[in-house]
Length: 281
Image (cartoon, rainbow, N blue to C red; front, top):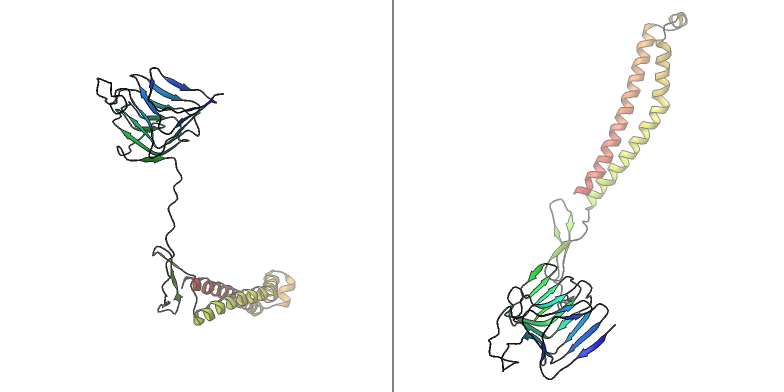
């Protein structure tokens, strides 16, 4: 495992591919300038910390960059060097206050678990940044950041205006309070006294009707049904005991009891229906 800091007051010339192996940590300190020859690049398989500052950025550029190599007789151009490859094992790598220019692909990352803070890109041939195959396009020579959890500042508290409740035609009151940013949300509706009376009257009628219907079914209808069934049996005993009028009267009594049971059940359904529908108003 290698841990090393690179700091140089004069540019460093890279003449072959540079690899940061897995498990190694390399730090480029502020003010470091790295010049790359053609077809060379930096391969980050371990961890790379680029720690520039706004006043002294870390620079990755072509060896033909006249700003850092005045002796070059060739003008710098895109595609002069390959770029920086960040592999999927390079989690934690960060680029802060740096400049990357005249490469083929700038930073090409196989992982999104790295960070860029105020990096500037310019004159790269194919791309400035590619993350997992997705190309990002920062504005040339404008500080760019990636992989940061940016939290926007909270707005200053606003004074809530006084809201008067609005009253609708059916006497329901809907109050509205203003949230920060000007959006609104409704509060719970408050039912009028008349609607409350209707609501719970429906509930009482429904429950009462259901109870009476069940009681009448058990105490009246079932005995009358048994009596009618007995009279309806064709036997010598019944023929001597009951007349045809007895059979008709028994049937009518049973039917009236059944109708009352059905009426009670209907009252129960209506009462519960009124109770339920009252919540829609």
